[in-house]
Length: 401
Image (tube, rainbow, N blue to C red; front, side, top):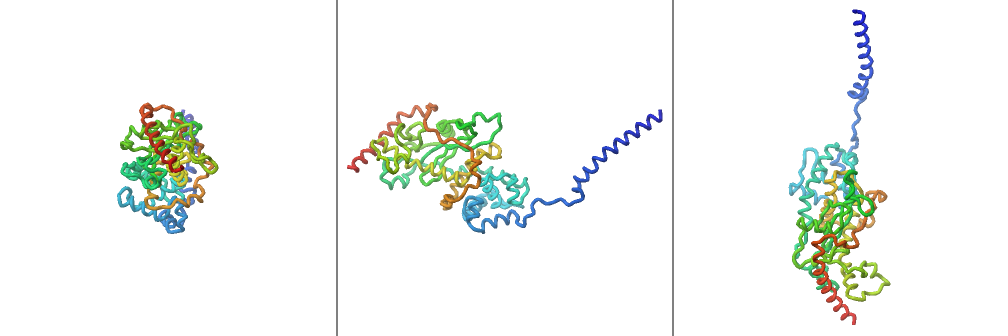
């Protein structure tokens, strides 16, 4: 009996010895890195604060490449955020650094790993401060993306006989644009657009100074422009009585949203060099409508050139992906408010490789009669459009004779 117990104890001891042969080296490696000192990740002589200083005090183009704006504009925005207590300095990170993290992310589609490398902070620090800026995007949108209030006629209309008095009640232009979105497979179906890619359909309005005055983001890529407009109206987007926006053929023609005539020359290239002049009131209206509505196409073009993250899927949670177009619009308006330049964008390569851009559809070409509240107003819209177009044609014909 005693020999059996002795043998059992001996085998248990041997088993424990074998296990310890594996455990002890692992514990040693984890606790002491095998006798070697732990290597610090951030070995650059420049801290995040010093890196930002180098960018802001170096050649202005360096700041344009890093943050898509000039140093003076960056400082003005940082000072505003601090002055208004929208962001605060913390013990380790100042407001201008937090702004730098966010703008670098927005300008380059930079991951948190990229930002750690660039600004020499921990992943937790980067994540916390990026989140802080995302959290103030709604407040900044409310403050800097304001619908036109409808007082007076814009000088680009009032000083141009092609547009005045015909478009004197026009507030601006509206268009829909698709922005890529990344979402779980089980939720993808409604976001799949007619090109088969995943996107959100974003509605944008701008004035004739190329400032954005409204944004509605987050709608599924399968939604029509007209449905996104209806949603915006239900959520508070308002057009003052007697005023209107210019829209394209993807919207219903109503007294508040004036669309071009269908089946008639419209795009500016159709009236370009070598083409006949407008031959009737519908063509003349369409030509001048296109000249004015081109402001929204130009504004969106500048926005996506400045922030090409709007052309690519991102790694952010869906709630932040919806805020990214709004963030880009906010900074676009702030850059213009602080007299930032955009001419340099014409010769600036994209910060993100174009081969990574998602193939996206343009706005809708035709209204599908899918919004009853808008369809019911078409007759009144047609009457207003005909009245404007015929007055325009009468004056045009008189001046040509």
